[in-house]
Image (cartoon, rainbow, N blue to C red):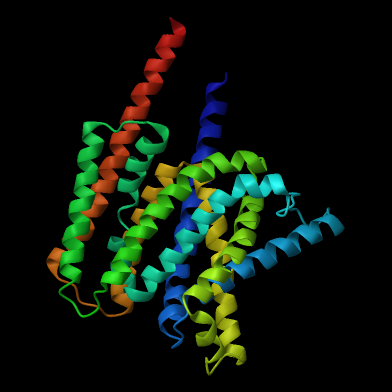
Amino acid sequence: MYQPIEKESLLVKYFRIAGVVALYWFVSIVTVFVNKALLSGLNLDAPLFVTWYQVLTTTTICFTMSKLSKRFPNHVSFPEGNPFDRDTIRKVLPLSILFTAMIATNNLCLKYVGVAFYYVGRSLTTVFNVILTYTFLGQRTSYKATLCCVLIILGFWIGVDQESLTESFSLVGTVFGVLGSLSLSLYSIYTKRTLQFVKQEVWLLSYYNNVYSAVLFLPLMVLNGEVREVLNFEHLFTPWFWGAMTVGGLCGFAIGFVTTLQIKVTSPLTHNISGTAKACAQTVIATSWFHESKSLLWWISNGIVLLGSALYTRVKQVEMDKKHREDTNNQKV
């Protein structure tokens, strides 16, 4: 009697997950191309300012929705919360620091490297996830999963080696890519923990993260010498410049939400793997869009990273299924 209902609910669940993952792919790829245009095509050497404006745009959208939900509760829905509450700041600020580091290093990496190499430059997320899961949660990784991580590292090393032979190679961008992978792994792990403090409300967590990040970016921009760079920018007061910046801000709002949403409906591991697979498709699109020619070994490195990530996912899936069966049998006994 209950079997059809179970299958139907499971099917709905799979469709919901597939829909969220597809949405993440679309928004993420569009955001990467838009950010690349803003960071490299405006002749404005102020990557943190560009990132800060995106954060400020998201903050403004969330603040507006919060106010509208109170005035028009039947038409606008937004979870109630105060980002300036002391207890909220104490619980969410650590995640917001990771959020700031993640988006800053991502944009800095994208500024210095091409969109095609951005995939390999950010491919160590799974490796860092394994290391940090053991460091902070004490969870050991199996021998097979460790071998998959070695495969990913091998692909990353070959990719960097091949990219270094081209004129577009940037050591600084590669370093920021590694730091971006590290901060993304940390952010993914701590997002699951922090969501409980905001009653699993994705919108509210996004709001808090962006409010705190908008403040955190101010001293970073000053230290990076971007204030004078922005004030001296020749197109600072032109409508098209702020229009382009606003488009980037809207993309930043969208990617922040769908990233948190994907982690919520899947897991930090699945999110990392989805991001890696998405980046592979992004690489193919980028090489075609920018008419780039890459060596066979360069493409092999991309394949190795993707293969290592896919095998890792499969290994972890088998291990979780085995553990679930063992727990079920123990409960029966």
